[in-house]
Length: 268
Image (cartoon, rainbow, N blue to C red; front, top):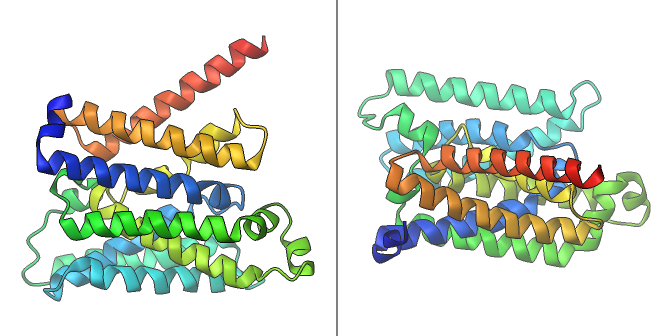
């Protein structure tokens, strides 16, 4: 497995994997504990349409998909503020419409020469240098965003009403978190896949929260666990010829299962 480190594509895949793992773990607690865990899944479906549009226009798909998904994420947040539409419904409305648009464009578009399967499962080993740079950028932005706004995000997570009373810019931070999440999802879709990228924003918080007694520890444990799992997934998938994204998610699932079992045994 270590022979992967000898190749440039392997080194790049590991760098992208680590960057996405850290970014996902940093965003995960604020999404999961705010009951926004499924926004990642919705944005992944929206990014599918954005990437399809980018391919059909003949330009770099990410340059089209990133603003497309960011705008969609802001629309979702806006719709969720309406009294007659809850957050899950807003995600479903926008993501289903965008995914349907993407499928229609693939069917009717001319010159679309990329398989749908490759878009659904992704391939971190064929990522470009631009995607490496963007992965590192989203990791840096996520770390900076959480570091600067940690106390405010913590207040919003546990008591949004008190946060507003304390003059925290709740709306601005919520929209900023949505935009940052959309950036992470678009980049992750190209490497991990449409169907699996949202799992990276859910598992870290769920796994870490069962072992931590503070919010900071949840983030710390989540980051460490996320990096280890993603690296294991890449090292396991490459020699066996397995889809990397699917392998990472399965390693996460097994890790969570073992963690729960150990926790149960300890409590007895």
